[in-house]
Image (cartoon, rainbow, N blue to C red):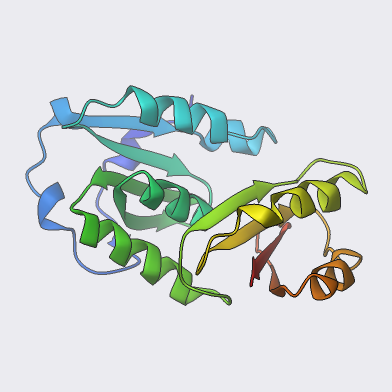
Length: 192
């Protein structure tokens, strides 16, 4: 496991000052999950992250250490009632603290994240189709289209720009926007 001490050092946050809920937080309430080595090894840490989230006590917060800012995770966590505070400590050293907040704080965090990227504001359904061979990514995304609720959207993660998906979305009356991430995959937002 990587040196977790860097996750405790001072750094600049990418957003506003540290939230009041995190100031003077006792160590006993802090759960640190460092997935940097796992991500560097090409492994997907999502399941490990969600298992850790499910094991949190109501009074605990999760500090996630990663090599990049996991923007799609913000929406997933907001749906579970978590707000976040992000710190960038270096080029491949990010620490994101997820904490339970009032409903309006979690909604605000989700809206803030969504406003930073193209596409609508609302609950995101994350469809991770990375690592699948064509046409599996397109099939996986299309099968999730009925899950989009009013005002919601899908955030699809793919290894390639999903060019063959676009006409299928247009046929079904969906709008979309794709951006290449700095991590080498593509994020496509799909909404009605």
